[in-house]
Amino acid sequence: MSIEALTRAKSILGDAVLSTHSYRGDDTLVVDATKIFDVMKTLRDDPELAMTMLVDLTAVDYLGREPRFEVVYHLRSFKSGARLRVKAPVAEPEDGSNPSIDSIDSLWASANWNEREVWDLYGIKFRGHPDLRRILMYEEFVGHPLRKDYPKEKRQPLVRRPPDEV
Amino acid sequence: MAETKKMVLGIQDVEDLADDEVDPMPTEPMTLNMGPSHPAMHGTVRIILTVEGETVKDADVQVGYLHRCFEKESEHATYTQVFPYTDRLNYVSPMLNNVGYALAVEKLLDIVEKVPERAQYIRVIVGELSRIADHLTCMSAGAMELGAMTIYFWGIKAREWIWELLEELSGARMTHSYVRVGGLAYDLTPDFIPKVRALFPKINTVLKDIEDSLYENRIFRDRMDGTGMITQERALSYGWTGPTLRSTGIDYDVRKAHPYLVYDRFDFDVPVGSKGDNFDRYIVRMEEARQSIRILEQAFDQIPEGPVCLDDPRIILPPKPAVYNTIEGMISHFKIIVDGVKVPPGEIYSYTEGGNGELGFYIVSDGTGRPYKCRVRGPCFIITSALSEMIVNRPIADIVPTFDMMNMIGGECDR
Image 1: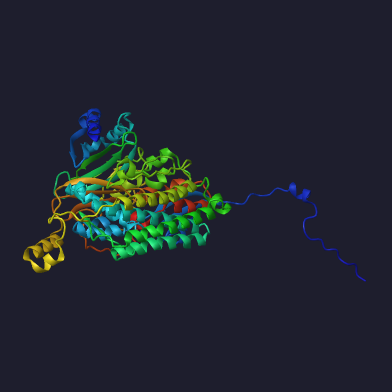
Image 2 (image 1 turned 180 degrees about the vertical axis):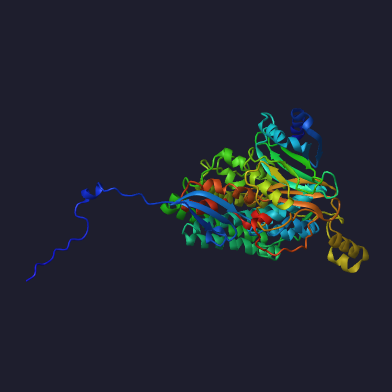
């Protein structure tokens, strides 16, 4: 069923698609992270695909691989029931600052909290997000705990810090 | 003799007062903290409210007080060791999480179809029992927070009957860890099915009692009807699933839309609401509990005999006599416990219908016995993100029923 969705998505997205694959019935599009907003908008607004719902938004840290991060979106169409996974590889800038990608908060309301969660746990910045704060961890927390280079046993005391140091 | 002083109390002429200018109550925005230790916030959510008089002008919903690093812990545990963590996601219906996670790992192993039929039926049975418990909790706690304490005791009593049976089955009242990759920890106890059957009339009576006490109750209806309204478009945009989405009239139920296990063999209805208000969410849950009983009755009639675990020594632990008496059995046991079940590299997203909606697991495997990433899409987290929008410009009193009918479960929301 959803192979058709994949073919359709490939044909309307053109060169924004880097590669596609299907594994265990899950169809995946790997797309250019710089075009993510247009890609998602096209997938949502295309009358045939009509990916109505952003089911999930998360990220994966492939430490040691280039590009290091992948932001993963799961979509579902309420018209056909088809599902698509969209992955956008995001590289870590060479100066060690946080990687960034465009926010899709204006397309789906569910992106708001999910993007905050990804920022909180992975340290990926979403450009254009209206309220990019930590959500699960506390404000004073330093670092991004789901990164593979954050040790599991590391402990942090809860210390109040002046806002500019956070 | 002094003249008696005439003392007149009260207003002499009401007409006189009508001309007086009455200043409106001075209101200025006030910031209030609701929670995290507010009794109606379930101890895990904090809402920073800006109120003007009785009206909420702004609300900042803050979650995360129950964050237990589910993902980080899972990345360091073997696939089997993640089961106890899934118990603690939606701790009101742990069986549904167990089943959802097992199905996700099985999808990655490509053995979903090979799991014995009896195991699939038992997974449906324990899952639907949990769903009834989940809905009972939501309905009774919701009524209690509007003042109906009796309803709470009725509902929780019925939930306890279910949990007692699940305790008999798994050894734990709430944290069952009953499901395994490729099957179940053990078969049903011999008199489990008759005991559950005997429970149905009692649960039906409780549901009927709750319905009779609340549906015509003026206080209850005043606070539930037309409060916490959401449109279909907004609900879809927020990514709502489960009873909350169905209250708006969209009949999306994973069990019907993408049948898993043996759900395609049962005849059941998907109840939907019409307005998307709190009362609709209440009646949808009530009806779903009844539909779950329908599914259970059919499952009891259809359940076949047979093994409850896949016959594959790479996935399932060998029987104990083999572990204690043969070297092969012991090595096999040792390898599965220490290294974990070897899962081929790849990534999958598997979804089931949890108590509150689509419970998804996104697992990335690098070919070892531990997940490289194990993300859970908790339906509560996504539903709670809409709370702020739903309570703004509404009275403070609407917060409690709206929040209750979302059935926010801290364990699943904060993970």
